[in-house]
Amino acid sequence: MEKIKIGIIGGSGLYEMAELTDRKEISVKTPFGNPSDSLVIGSLNRKRVAFLSRHGRGHRYMPSELNFQANIYALKLLGVERILSASAVGSLREDIEPLDLVLPDQFVDRTQGRISTFFGNGLVAHISLADPVCPDLMGHVYRAAQKVGIPAKKGGSYVCIEGPAFSTKAESNLYRSWGMDIIGMTNYQEAKLAREAEICYTTMALVTDFDCWHESHESVTVDMIIDNLHQNSQNAQSIILQTIQDLPEARNCHCAEALKYALITDRSIIPSETKHKLGCIVDKYLSQSPPS
Image: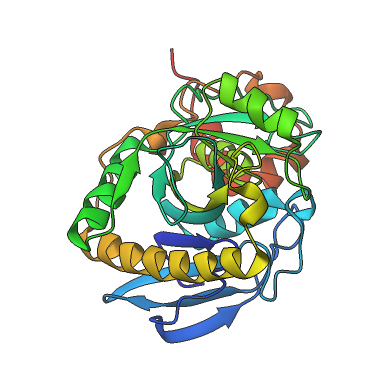
C-alpha cells in the first residue's frame, strides 16, 4: 500500500478536493470497522495526500454516527503523520462572525458516550491532552492563511456537542458564560484519537453563523448558511493548498512520541489480540522495554 504522510478530513461543505490530481480511491478496512467513505489518494502541489469526507459524500452520517476510530486508524494505516481538518462551526462571540476562520487550540467535550480512545481490552494508555492540537501544524496553517489573504484567529476554545440538533438558547448562553468561542459536533474525538495515534492534528473551524444566543439568529436562513458553507469550503481549500506547499518533510513537535510514557499496562499481560489490533500504533513500544 502506498505510504501517505498528509491526511485531510473534510467536513460539512468540503466533501472533496477539486485540485487533487493523479487521484485514486481506496477502501481501507480497520479493526474498528469502516471509515466514513473511501479514501481519495492524490497529489496537491506535488505532495501525496489522502482525503476523507468526514460525513461521507452526500453527507450520509450524523456526527453521533461517525466511526471516529476507523477514520483516524485508516489514515494511520496509510502512514499519515499530519491531519488537516476542516469543519463548520457556530460562533459564541460577537467578534467571531460568519465566514471567519478560527484555529482552536482547546476543546470541551459535551457529547454523550462517544468512543474516543483506541485503548481498552487489556491495554491502558493515559496520553497528555493538555494541548490537544499540534502547535507546529497549527502555526503552518495560520501562516498559510496569512499568505493567501484569509484572516484567521489563532487559538480559541471549541465546545463539542452531541447534535444533530443545535443548542437551546439556555445551552448556548451557558457555553458563552464558560468562555467558549465556537461550537461544533465533531472535532474533539478526532483530536484525541489523532494524539493517541501519534498523528499531528489541527482543525480549521469555519464559521457559518452565530449560534442561537445572538439576536440576529432569527434572520438566518438555510440559504444563507449554504452560501457560507460554499465560501468557507473555497477558503479552506486555498489554505490547505498553501499549507501543504509550505510543510517541511520532517515534523518538529512531540506528537510522534505521545505514547512514549502513556502505556501503563504490564507488557507481559497485554492480550495478543489487543496487541495485533493496535499494531500500527503500539508495536514500536511493545517491542522494547518501558521507558524509565
